[in-house]
Length: 389
Image 1 (tube, rainbow, N blue to C red):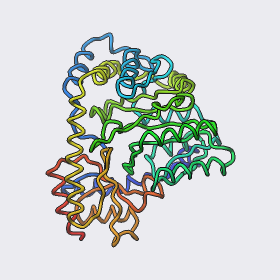
Image 2 (image 1 turned 30 degrees about the horizontal axis):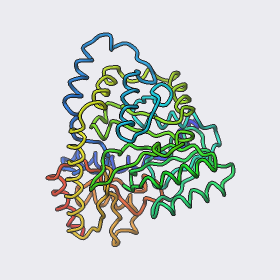
Image 3 (image 1 turned 135 degrees about the vertical axis):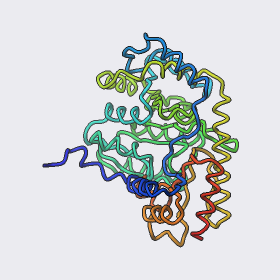
Image 4 (image 1 turned 90 degrees about the vertical axis):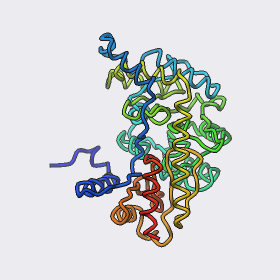
């Protein structure tokens, strides 16, 4: 029987190979220190949980909600942007709540692209950025991201000029997963100018807005005057507020793109469980102490991991943002490629990392550590990794 068309376009999920090996090791009773998946392990702040519980006790909140998100939640996101970036957003036409950022990205691409439209994505990138376009039958063009950001912009401009039909959309993500790369506001000024010149739609994933260290502040593309003419930005509560399983995200900015997403979602879902939305309002409007505590926890884990890796001879730089460390494969193992290297590390040291090839061909010389193990477990991992050197 012929394989389903869209499923046929999706390659085997590289991370499943490592996940299967992890599973088999655990079945054998082995203790795996797991840096593989970026799944936040810190608890959701208590005041947010308490609001969820109280809202869930009200039977009126158990009915169907609205697919675009209740008005007070959209208004809270609008207020967050105003406080954080001085960006004014109309909660009715420029904000839509989504069932996590993955759902928002994938349905946005489905809503605004046609089969054969060219979508440019960085290489390497977070897989949904690439595969949301594949699933939507768009034509995906990967642009190497590693190196200087001006070099990256030059590659984008060359791609816009050389590709026919002209690209319709550019997907960006800063602070970046997996590379942890960061940019300043001037980068987005150039992106917006480029988008205006070539009539490009821009989707910027700002998932790691709050997870920044050493004085760095992550800019929003919507801070650039006129950005809303062609740009949307995506934010999620998963990382900042330790709410990954709650599935709360937002797409904000250009009203035409937001409106298209609202329209397609109206056919596909009834939105999030309303008590989750009510608790999310408390998260966005509440005190920022919990966010600062989360950032400090990741900073501490980053320092323990990176300092430890450098101490054993694995040269890695400290990222200024995200909950990841993007580590070049040590020279003596580089010819293995990231998948075989990750499997070897798992077998010999009982430490799990994500192979860079899972994020695109440009990632094959790297592995990604997610900072989801505490300092004690991280030191345990360093002691095990030392045996490789």
